[in-house]
Image (cartoon, rainbow, N blue to C red; front, top):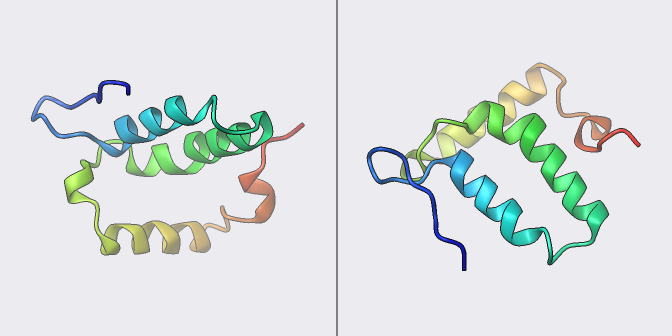
Length: 84
């Protein structure tokens, strides 16, 4: 198993955990599935959650993310699929 990356305080961030997830998933998923996951992470997850530490993530932060996506209409189905 890959060694986890931590920030200066010794706590893993959402960005680090997401990159770990993608790295570990790459060989376990179909290429199309991995491509979609990577696109969603790069386009939606990382820009919003990048500096947040895992131990700080809570329902309020996730709810705000969902509301922001809905308010900006940035969550249409086409936004979650990379262009061919």
